[in-house]
Image (cartoon, rainbow, N blue to C red; front, side, top):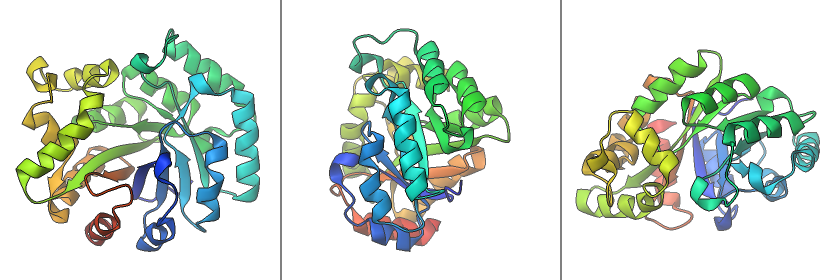
Length: 268
């Protein structure tokens, strides 16, 4: 499946507006965030002709694998080669019965009869989930990570599996303004232990993840500045082993078309 090197990650609540221009700008994959189901994907495939549409991610606690497999079959029948099923376990803080996440993910994969391994990808951060992603899917979709994690993930899953990394960015030249926007976004993730545990594994300390996060965490995980400066940070993930980076521009509304255009000029 051709994801392209650069894609876009956007909350599904914001809808498919502007998707045709994103495709024309050369973005290879559009990641539909906020726990979408397969029913949510069709309008995005209908609005495009070449772009891959991916779920980023379908939450396994909220769906039955047999129904997901049926939805996948319908979408790939109607839009062959353009739908990537991203699945994941979500956050412990958001799921009351969050137990045995690795076993739950493995069982969900077992239930995806008829979905080829290379048409599905798993959200993964920690070593065991990365192993499972490499074993049972195209690879790993990573989120809210520094380049150090991308390098680690590449070493963990090997050269033949795909790493698709989400990178939130702020196209804003004033550092104070950009960091304020980034911190507003980061607050929810710094309150979730799967993300903070991951940062602690990769060179950050308790002071970095306390409160609204240190400048070091904010600047590395959520690069900001002129498009050229952001492009350098994105290339840091690509150089560390990512095959694909999906950008999530912050601070300029749900469909920041000027940001998409500016980033495309320096990255595509």
